Length: 205
Image (cartoon, rainbow, N blue to C red; front, side):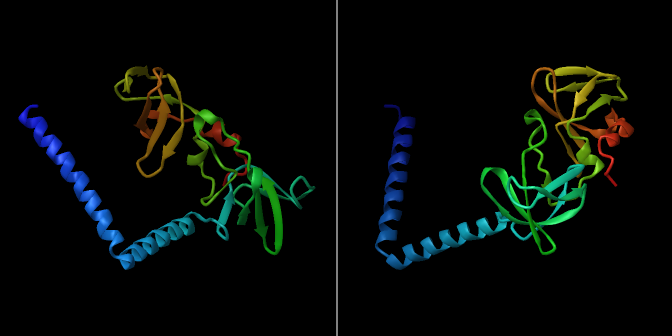
């Protein structure tokens, strides 16, 4: 065995002994185990609270949203885009229980976007905007160089790409090129037919 391999082997043995030493140290001090267990439980509880959206206000992110008196029941209220409601509970089989004032109503979430684009929910914590409306739309490249090198493929001005998502903070659109790679590019390098897009969302303010 070479000297290098001997050092590696010694390191592995030392690491194993150190780990066993830590385990034995913990078991020799029950109070330390209880404190560690309490910290783990507290962390799990805190994370679950952060992920719990019950009681939070949401906004309608579709043109209209039918709310039923009960699951599979009759339509009681039809909300318009960006109307607000409160999430009461997420039920089985994608059913959602929500509240408007004192009324408790129901709808089935049913993701409404194409799976290739990523799922879009009918209600979200932020209002629907024209930037959200970009998702799934075809936009035309209009780069000052006349072309764009996008992750292994070349795109020329006039070519269309389908927007997978838009990063409002960085001002970039994400799309998939011809060879299947994802690319993020500044939005100013594209022509966008806002009039056509907004026709699909007449309730968008």
